[in-house]
Length: 407
Image (cartoon, rainbow, N blue to C red):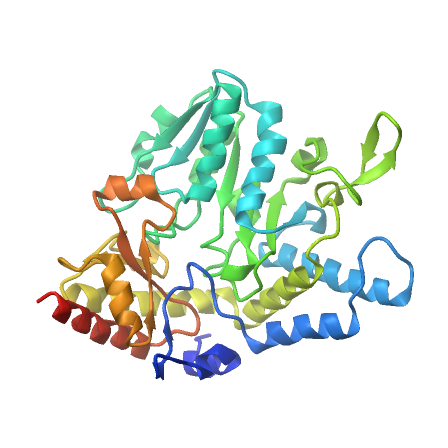
């Protein structure tokens, strides 16, 4: 099945707007995606006809709200091929999900002398929490290097995964390089020494099929807002046995079973980790986004993006740009980072905005990676299911305008 991006664009009302009087060319979906009318309508319908708190009341309206909320959980479980809804914890997004693992599993299992392994390409959300855990516990934080082509040095894995390794934290798809990492190989290596793997799927889940069983991951996190859903919603997948043994992340209402003067007992998973009133409408919207993507099929999304990314890389290189990341389109996603001669990425983004083209410029929350690449910043064009070859052409045309400012 192939996607027709021209048809899909009609689902997204924002593309009816203009940018500086010109057609909107949105190439920043790795930061946040646009939202289809189907998701917007679902959230409006929740507020108009189902709005009530969940897991607290027995009246009909509350039961409708709870059915919508838990239906979204089921949709998210199916989306990543999880075996049970119990393994799906709703959070505010990938950052909170990673921090939940850091606080709850990490503080219970990581001690002085242990090692935490991450990679040189990690987003700050999958880096800073592990820095903090290492500082708190006395563990050592290590970085698996990358090649000049932006791929992990898997040939060095035996030197970096040792009997001291308690956690491997890795992105499934780099937000800068587009690299799709061999997570299963990393999982096999860390499991062989008794450690656990935490996968940042914030970039992967919107763009490719994800199967937590095939990856054999212990924890996996993703965010709604990068995959056609609202902000303020995300998922932490955790193996049920691990979630069962972990202490709560937040204390408060709903996450308890019984409360006494001097102690409490905890609710069953996943509710043990969902203290207080959750972002109900956002979760419902995330469920609608999952259903939207599932109807298109993630296989079709992936094939479409490979075609768009390959076309973009060819055109950028022909225009004289330096493109970062793997050369093989089979091993990368649709986030394409580049630099263009003497044009600073910030200047570039400002100039081409006047042409209606939206890209990201900066360090992309990956400053250690920028240092590894030897640059202070890059420009990034990130493509999604609604982008077309005409969007790539508009990017290239706008870059010619930018070059003209510095000729």
